Image (cartoon, rainbow, N blue to C red; front, side, top):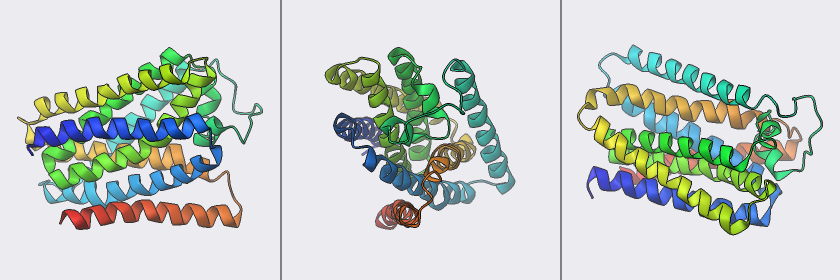
Length: 266
């Protein structure tokens, strides 16, 4: 397969598989399984960042200090982008207000995100999700242009994160009055933005491969930021020993999955 074929196939398959898995969970509304998915996603994202993306970027960067700069810049950019989203939805309930801890939407991002999500319209949710998918496609393209095996690891990590995120989107759409069929169709259409992002990323980056190591720093920053800033704070809401052991094991399973994929790739 050519690099472009890998990018398009991974973007299309990743979007369809993550949405299909999310739809099954969301339609059944099994909120108890969501924290398990989140824990696994944390491990997959951190494993991909530290075992795959960053080591590969270091091997291909003449000045390793530039990688640190690109990661720090990426973390700051993602912080500002998330802050803009939160400002946009300032009309939603404040952090101090009561929320249902057993609400499957709340379990996904208990650190303030879903308090805002209840006030969003379905249209706004899908606009944000479409942009997110488009950016993921660009990140997948950058990883595949650097190395096919790295692209596979990156695509798997993004898909692992997308499943709990898509569960949240489905539940919010259903909460907003969308039918199950319409929610599924809209999410499938939104996932096509990942393919568009992958194609654009390939066309834009193929001629400037010298930028790829620095762009991989942004890829790693996105994974680290989502895991540490968005997902881990929600896991800390469950402080009992059984939940903690379960989270550690699932995070380890996520990391182990990435390690195994890399070993099979070699």
